[in-house]
Image 1 (cartoon, one colour):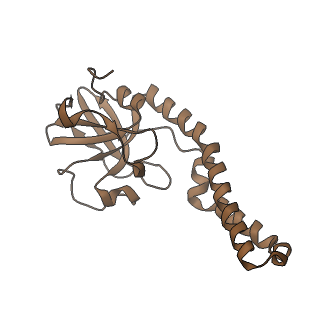
Image 2 (cartoon, helix red, strand yellow):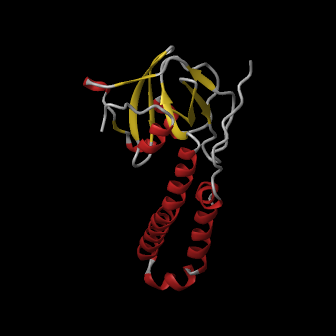
Length: 193
């Protein structure tokens, strides 16, 4: 029986724009436009100003997008869907969606709890849309104690993420996401405060 794919809140235009390179292209175009005026300062000064400008622009863009991302994740949490990454040894073979985290064994996607099972839907790295067919993990039980206590996720999985460990029919899996989303998907241990 084929399962229906998850339907998370789609990425907004602002969240897609930096990935598409729109703003980086605009920053380079602006730098090229004012190059005539900066040429009077010398090449090293020009290079420092351009690199510093792009860095400041990317930082400002990140700060602008952060509230939009939190709002989208809150809307998903209300529906019981969490944007997360999973890592386990029993993932099916096949090409994963392109993502930097996959080199470290993490597969990005969305998860939801259905009838005591965890349904995971892979996502594309750049647009955030679902791809492929969902994976279902049955008999899900959050693990705690010892080294299996929820911990902060590595930097490459995103800021403010937590990694929890789940015992499933396919073995122990790691799932990373926001605490609010993991609680909504039924993947966060209840004993942890």
